[in-house]
Length: 332
Image (cartoon, rainbow, N blue to C red; front, side):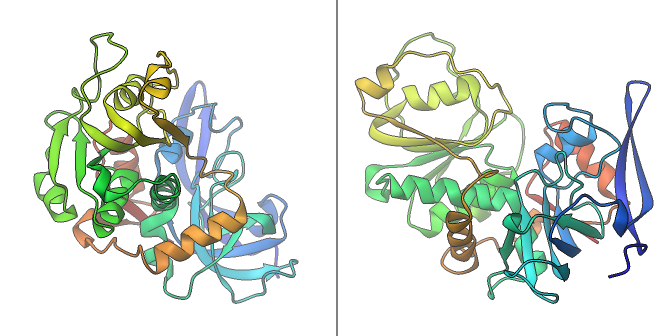
């Protein structure tokens, strides 16, 4: 293909300690090495993208850079035997949008090992309504079920319930017959959204942030999906019913976990880590296929905002302020 072809991209520049956002023209030849070139149709906004945009060196080391850890589009060129021009594909996780130019651009070039075949039941927009957030939510539910969690054991609490991972996890759990408790920040609103998702009850994040110092608490739930980490994760483990399961997929609150072993050795609680970034391809494709079929439950259009690259600034700032809700998808 013509490597001189120009395309539009959101670029982040580091200038005198500040991180400046610019939409500019780039060329295919400017993209990193890889076997597959994808014309991006849709991307989506995730917390890692907001961190990359704001100069978090734990996410992106070098600038200028194009964020966007999600992309769905059409293969334009392939040196891989797995894919051919015209194939519809999804690329999420791995290093996309972190230290490899990502999906906030009309083209990406990536290794073939990062590329997932688009399930026939999904289109580009639907795939990015899910994106990394939806995949992470589905992987969390998949791991809960694999660990033996059932609706009969009791309610499952989901933190960050109004965010991307939380809202999709709730939708899947409710469809499977689970009673779901939504944990949200105080005064965050969203009653109508949570009712639409089908949650059984709502609790303040203060309840999932116990400050008593006690090693165990009165059991309040049978399992949990946590996106916060830190003391919130600690509280979820302390207040989980015996033999329950708790998944962890984020560290928005903290990456530290200071606790005793008592939830594990006295109540038999299982802590399940969710690594959506480097999940093996076989499992990744299996979970995407579930999202496209049995678990294709994210139909609440009120929870989806479609943005252009030019409009994305507003939604990035809301996410950094922890005021974002639902999913923001980016149409290229």
